[in-house]
Length: 427
Image (cartoon, rainbow, N blue to C red):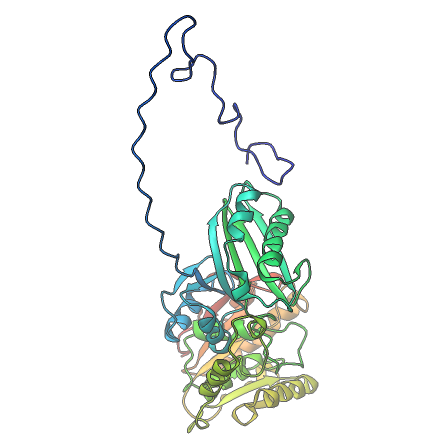
């Protein structure tokens, strides 16, 4: 972007003469003529009526983070859960609500990676303007003076180009407004985002990312996040009454996620959240919300949910993860190579698999052989079943020989961009 950078952390756009100075001799700027009569005194202007007080702006709402490319899946979940005014935005979903809805989102949403409470949104062209608007936030109603706050800022295409200067201004407003220590470290996070001169200030109500639910302590070489597993199951149109098999389950993320959905367990039931340290936190309301989320009874007729792996030690970790999650009775783990996969008795269901690929594990020829063996097993023994396969390598999906439809949009999984490949019922 053109323009020089000022020492105050702003980027000046364009050049020209400083505003507010007039050239001598301009119309309306001349004094009385020399030797002439003084001009008549101007007629006093009629007083301008006072403008009516502006109505307080509605709260900006919540931002639910999602992997870029999967926002529509999280939007569908948010709407199913009854979050109002839900709409997609780059990297997530925006919904209406304040702290009460933030608590519910952290507890109940399976696909959200983080829940941000937006506390202010305004244009800011200069640090002084940012400072003034940040001080209008009622920080004392949001933050406790005994809980330190970490302020993080980013700037993109904005005249306030120095993110550190922006963070310092907001930190000062927090210190003066709430009496809380604010700076580069803290137990709570305040996020300042400047994008094309629009400043959004948010509170991170989650703390640890929401895929950290407290149950999965045993992980494999390339673990799948629980939040991503939930979105994959939704993208594959899996429903709680449908059998599910992951023949390369690793730490068991996909079958455990499916079992939690079948059991009706809230994903945030066993962990703490950052909002518990906010000034407006109501412990009684939180306890009631958690109690209401406990299922009344175990599922009456659960479907078969299976996880397979050839590594006995990996399977032992998956079983331990299922125990900690409280779903061990709903998941059966079997030591078996993927090419030896067998369907359970009963109706067909979904095979969902996150095999090793490309830059993740193994050599290319061995990976092709692995995928080809998996494809043969599924075509031979899984008639009527559908398949959902996650990979960064289209060639590995083709190596299975399975009749995949064109893949969905790419989305991040660790350092890679991956796609979900889906079939209809196998012949």
